[in-house]
View 1 (cartoon, rainbow, N blue to C red):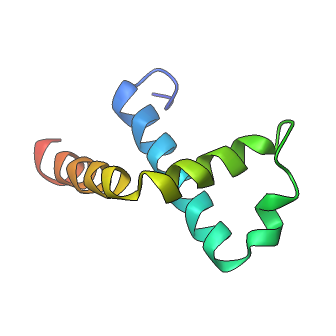
View 2 (view 1 turned 90 degrees about the vertical axis):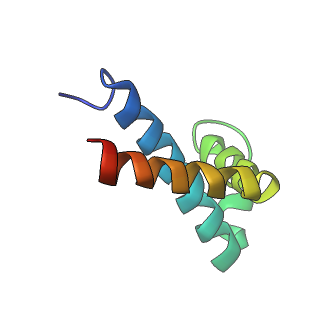
Length: 72
């Protein structure tokens, strides 16, 4: 089943996208800062969410890992 049709897989993909964009922006900020608008602006927005809401994103990562490892 595709990640689009499975809600838990969709949430996992979105959470991994947020974490990856925040990590890339921490290593090389110029990569994401030059694309603040348009289609590539989505990655900049995900990086901002990951930076500003980092305790919540970390909590979601722990909950998602727990649910994938023990509830499936």
